[in-house]
Length: 198
Image 1: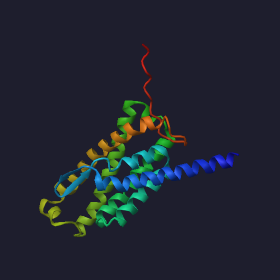
Image 2: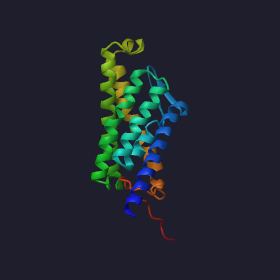
Image 3: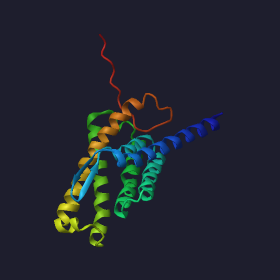
Image 4: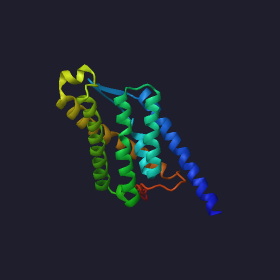
């Protein structure tokens, strides 16, 4: 009986991971985009990865890799694909931290520190990837015209921190009501406000 329950839970986790991958691939195609040449930021593009890391490390890994494969097959430039692959870093670290300390998101301070930590990890990973392409002369002319500091450090680095914080906020907002209906074990506990008694 317990074995059947484990298999059922694993199957549900796989289905949820697949759905999050699909959403993660579709969002960049249709979501609003903020363009600050040569960079662009797609609203909510990281939400599926954040939700995945709220669930578990295997789901986080599957969604980070799955969305990367989706970007590859969709024909995005190689630098975009590798930047998507770099999401494995913050997704796995975040999921492992939540597995170890599942009550991290039950306080405003804990949530703020956690989201800032993930945003910095996210930005450092993407800056590292873009730096390799930049010094490998593999970026567009706009990157070189504006220089490394402005395009890589400011637009990619600082821009990713801000973008990541916004997407984390959206993910937490979406995740909070989902915790009432999700039937698989998950790591991110979010304090649900109790209704005030009248």
